[in-house]
Image (cartoon, rainbow, N blue to C red; front, top):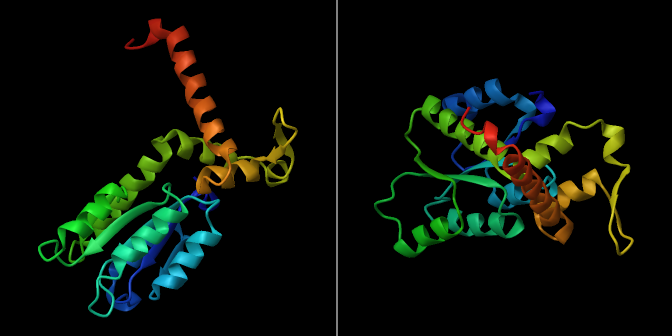
Length: 208
């Protein structure tokens, strides 16, 4: 997979210093320096995510900022923008986390919770699993297919609805990521229906 097709790894953490935070080196080695973004200010991280919703994104989100559990609010803001952003929550300890806050993470589909003192190699494994998770989703697979197309083809009309509205592949990609246009979910549903139909028609091969 080329760098352009790799997901962005967005770290939102106010206690990150590259010199003593080996995880960043591991992530840059795996995904490329240009795909790893670090934000000490949560608002800046959120703005980056909002402006890159046409891309696959995995977020490593710290909970505590200046001694306050700001991360839970940040998590909610991210999921309001798109439920397709994969969020890995980092925390010092779950022992002191309020049950209501944990419910927010569970109901908001936080993908994974890791402790901050987890070895960098172990957190990298979790990020890799998150990447696989994105690729295995129908919407993730559709996104990946779109991103593999030639840049000039992304701007061309790809589909026209019965109502006369035209969409390029970039339009569809953004709709999948943001959910602000039903064409995104329609494309996902159509892809899933096609896959099921192909499996049913060729069910004799399943399990061979």
